[in-house]
Amino acid sequence: MRGLRVVALAGWLALGGCSPASEPPQSPVAAPTPALPSWCTAIEAAAGSLGPFECLALPNVLVTGFFGPAHNPERSDFENACFAGDGEAASRLRLAVRPAASLSFSYRASRKVSTSGALDLGFLGPWAPSLRASSMAGQAVSIEVSLDDAEIRVLPSVAEILGQQFSDGKLADEARRSLESCIDTFCQSDGEQLVYTAKVLAATVSVVAEGETLSADSLAVDAKIAGFAVDRQRSRRGRVVITGKEKLNVAALLEPAAPAFARTQTCQRVAADRARKRALAQLQELGLTTLSGRALSEVPSRTEALRKDVATAELQDAERTGMLSAIEAIEGAARQLALAKPTGAACATRSLIESVLVGGGEVSRVHGVLADVLTPLERRLAELANTHALPCADPIWFRDQDRDGYGDKKTSRRSPTQPPGYVENGLDCYDQNPEAYPGQLRYFTSHRGDGSYDYDCDGKSSKQQAVVNEGCREITTLGIVTRCWADVGWTSSVPDCGQQGKWLQSCEANTLSCTPVQEPKRLQACR
Image (tube, rainbow, N blue to C red; front, side, top):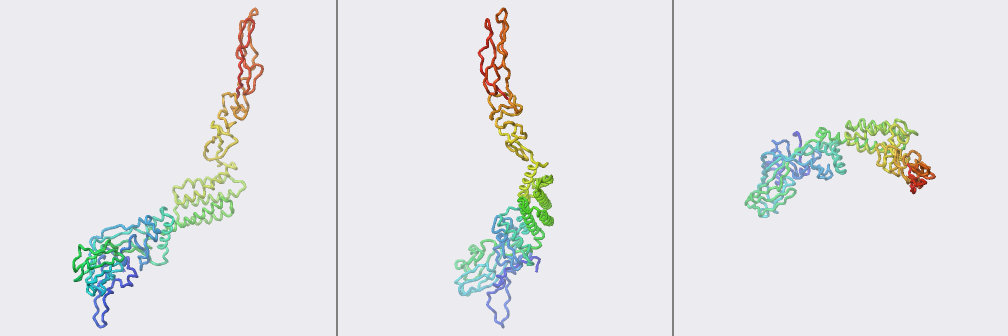
């Protein structure tokens, strides 16, 4: 047996395959008739210089390549068996065409037309056409088969491409499950040797039928599996040429699957993916248990078992490091949630979680799951730190409703970053008026909104003017007023904030007296 064994379908062999089964049986006493070369023998002889190609019983069905056990390699095709029929997902497994130079091939045989006028070429294979020429019933016809315009079609490294497709994460769920099952077929074959198509030999098949009364007009062609038609340009009376409408894959070179999949580590990729999924599922369950606060005392023992699984699983170093850190963080969170009052260790656990969350670039295949598990735990630890004022508690921010830059100490929240509408200080004494804030220098004649005039937040209302005047002042000479002025201030008493009072601003001199100018009324301003 040559290096890579290529075989024909068992079903075709059962039909007689490569032997001239249509010859009439010989008399027991007659000399045996020499056996004609079979179609397969001729194909193998012609392809011998190209490699260990052998014929296929169903040549034109190989499109994306087939795989199966060595005795029947055409059992299944990659597109349907490995990608659930998703042609786009299987597009990387298309056959690449490479010319095979000139391939000399000629196969001759002689057959008789049946009494019904039928000439069955099935001795070539179940794909071959049937001819019907009623005018030639019982006559002998010479058959010549040739291959034209041959080429080799190369299937890319199936094991490598299947592994790459499985790892890229872009397949739909159904196609991914199908691909995983397909790879398992190669990786877990229970000792049965599996092979897959590595190359095929493609050519145009021409059949020449010669008979004295044979003509293209009197001949009918049953195309069967492969499409055949009469080539009228090459045909003449007594010689009819029938040509395939497309190139047929007439032979194949198979590659044993086991060494190919071992060489490309495709089976290891699938095993690593399963280990990763299994560990992540356990980690998710453990994270939910911890977050819910149930059976917290059991978490340390469960994390220890999971830690051993991750340490021995087929994972990348970055993946393993991220998952082990997540396990440690879950265990630490469980210990803190089990305490009546958390300790400073909660801050160390929170810091560990943050380091895992920000380090997702190197462990992208597991980071999404780790983030889903650890993010709610980090929030829970933040709540503990904030409630118990641990060192890692978030900063306190105060609501600044009136947007004056000063917050209300009665309305605050903790957050790692400044929330919208909040400021760092809680110094505002009235957060519903932007004019009320520490250091306000202006005075106001109306209260700030709550009845108070404490605009500068010093805890009291300070009046702008608190002086009571003593009336007009004058200087006289010989009883005549020579000078007159006023001590500026309120008349009688100082009004309260926002209240109206009389205000003495000036006096005027008459001949014998000094009298006030009409006293205007004004409002008392405060801050």
